[in-house]
Image (cartoon, rainbow, N blue to C red):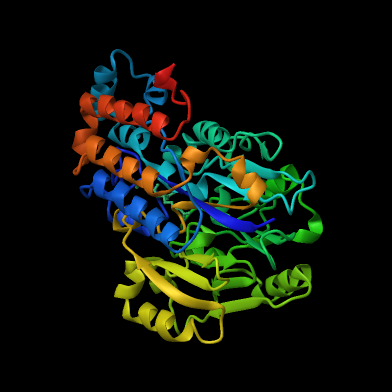
Length: 445
Ligand code: SUG
C-alpha cells in the first residue's frame, strides 16, 4: 500500500475582496479597501494546484462557500428582497456587509484539523471543521465547511466527520493552520503538534497584549480527544505571545513541518528547548531535522511580510523534499539569500519553487494557507470524490468556469450590487456539477 499527502486547495470564490476584516493580520489591514481581482485570484490558485500536479503530487480542490451570506444578514435584521437587504446593509452596516461577502473560505488551512488514520484509535481519517470564532466573517464558515468535507470525503468506513467545537471564543479553533504532523513516513503513526495562543480557562498563562490569540489550548485538547489521538503522540505548544503581537496570527505564519522536518523561527514558540525535547522524545527513533531560523538572519518582520514559513514542504514522489514559496520570498533579498544558500545546506529540502499568489497574499494568505493537507493511502484516496481531484481535464474545466463567471475587478462599493449575488449563485451552481458535489448550497434547495 502506498501512502502520501494530498493537498486540498480552496478554490477562491467569486466575491474575493479586500475589506480589512482581520485585526492582527497585517496584510489584511494594510490592503483594506484595495480593489481586488477575483478572476486573477482564482486563476493564481488554480496555477498553484497545477504546479503541484506537475511535481507529481496528488492534488485536490475544495469548493468555495456561497457569498454573500444573505441568511446571516437577514438574521441580523435586514429584510425584504435580496437587493433591499444589500442596500440597507451597505447603508447601515457596511463592515457587516463586507464580512458577509468575504471569500475567506479559500484559506482551507483554516477549514479543519485532520488526523490521518495511522494516528487515530479507530483507524479512520478524522476531520473537525474549525469554528473560527475570533473573526465574525470567518465564524460564518464551519457549517458549510462540514458539508463540503462530507461531500468530498463521503465514506464512513474511511472518514470520520466531527461537528465543529462550540461557537465560543473559549474554544476558538483555527484548524490545520495551528496543527502540524511529524512522522517518519506518512503511513506510520506520527506526532501531532497543536499550537495554541492562549488558555481560555487559565489566566495565569502568558497571552498576547496587542492582537488576539485566535486558538486556545482547550480547543486543541478537545480536537485531540475527538480524533482519538494517543497522548504519547501529541504535543501541545504555546505560541510565543510576542510574535502574535507582531502579526503572527496563526502558527503557519512562523513554522511549517513535513515528515521529519520542522522549519521554524527562533521566536515561534514559548519554552522552545522544552518543546523540542518533548517532540524529539515522542518522535522516537529516526532522523529528525529541526531547522531553526535565527532572528539574526531573519527578523519576525521579514518572516511576516515574506511568508517564509507559510510555505509548503512537499515530499516528492522520488523522496526529495521541495519548498513551495510565494514570490514575495524571492523578492525579499534577505529571505532569498536564506532560501538559496542556508536552507539547502544540510537539510532534506533540495528544491525551492516560487509561485505567484499575490491576490491571496494581500489578505494574509500564502501558499500554506490555501491548502488542507490529508495524509492517506491508496485505499482511502480511492474513496475520495474523484471529481475533486485535480487532473488536466478538471483544470481546463475550472479555468474555463472561472473565465466565464468571475469579475476582474471588485471594490467594496460593488458589494451592494444584486447582480453579484446572481452571478455567484450561477457560478456555484455550475461548480457543483463540475465537482459532483450534489446540491450542497442552501440556494439550491
Ligand atoms: O483569517 N484573511 C485570513 C487569512 C487566513 C490565512 N490562513 C492561514 N494563515 N492559514 C484571516 O485572517 C482577510 C479578509 C479581509 O480582510 O478582507 C482574511 O480573512
